[in-house]
Amino acid sequence: MNTAEQLDPVIDRLGRVLDRGNLPPPYARCGARLLSLLTRPVQVVVTGFAGSGKTKLLEMMSAHPDVAHAQTVPIFELSYGDTEQALIERADGSVSMARGFLKHCEIPKDAVRVRQELPDPNLIQQDYIEIGLGSTEPERLSALEAVIARADLVIWCSQDFTEEEQWLWSTVPDHIKDHSVLALTKADQLLMRDMLNDNIARLEPIVSDEFLGLFPVATIQGVTAQTGAEHVNDPLWAASGGKSLMQLVSRHIRQGRTADIDQARVFLDRLALKMPQDEEQPSEIQNAPPKPVGAPETHTARAPQSETPPDEGARDESTIGLLSEAVDVLQRHADQMFDALNESEDVDSKKIIDCCNDAIRSVGNLLGSGTGDATTDALQGDLQDGEEMLMLFQLERGEDAAVDAVALVLQLRKELAGKMAGRG
Image 1 (tube, rainbow, N blue to C red):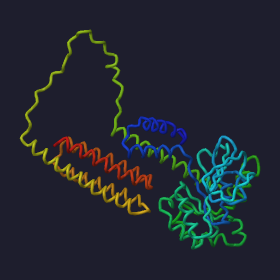
Image 2: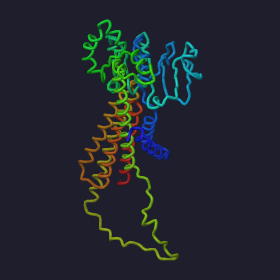
Image 3: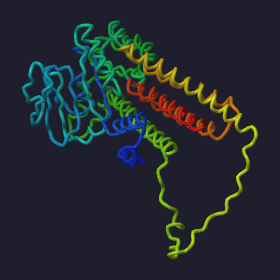
Image 4: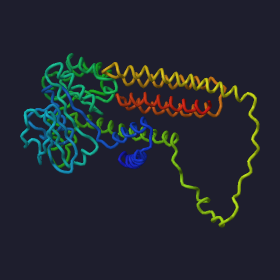
């Protein structure tokens, strides 16, 4: 079964669960984000300094030569659409649409984003996005934030990956670096100047720590191999370096989609245990003969209730004490994490989610230290569900996932408080 075939049932099931509208907020938001992740194309972002060969690399990867406009814009997107059209967004937020190809359009000087849509099935699974890094340090840092926000996979274009580029790249979070490659563009020109091998040797130690891999690419050769004839010129495509790069990109997209599917399945499975839906009655009950009108009700004999064991009251007090302490533990952790969210502009989502994990583990250890009864045993199961939900949030990352992790801790606190009230 291929990835596309796996997607449909998972998307359908997740959509039906969300449509019911009865999920607690952390679960509802997590489910909505997972559904959005599964239904949007993978975002392949091409970035680098001016003149680094970004546009030509994008055209080579998409097999659409000369699709971009001669005028540079901060963000250029190439995406699937039912018809050939270009969307142009200006600085004031207004968006205009033009039929056909962007290169035939007149682009306003204040355009901040342009999007070329083409009815090409090869574009359904991924968007190609070019984000230039500008010329000043503030512009570059701002553009890099856009790269981080948009990218599922980053391709950094350069010929030598200078110290300035290395410094900029050092500001990128590790989870983005784990899904990024360095493309040495214009590799044919570097080879003619006898610089390619030296650059590769110099950069290999850096790449081993900072990227998935290093790919020398002769983009013009790659474009020619892809589009110069009715069929791909495979020897030229391989020699250009484009084939190796695209194989990695395709493999990464497939693996990412498979991980997204697995993540959604884990979410749905945990949700099914936490909030089981009413099942249809068993067939033997559905097919049972109707009871005659006026027939007396029958009742199953109930065993006589035993008297409350002498130590039951003591066990109740012990359980209530544990629940009260657990509620306080979760509340303290939640307060600390909300303070961290409010005080810092740059949310360290990993740190927040790790703190949530610590809170739940602390409560689990606390409840495990008690004498044990049905209430605490059931809560241990809830805590395990919470830990597995936090694993999903860790995979998502980002501020929204951090906020939902804190909300999950508060949800567990609410459930604990309810159990405590029930025992009181």
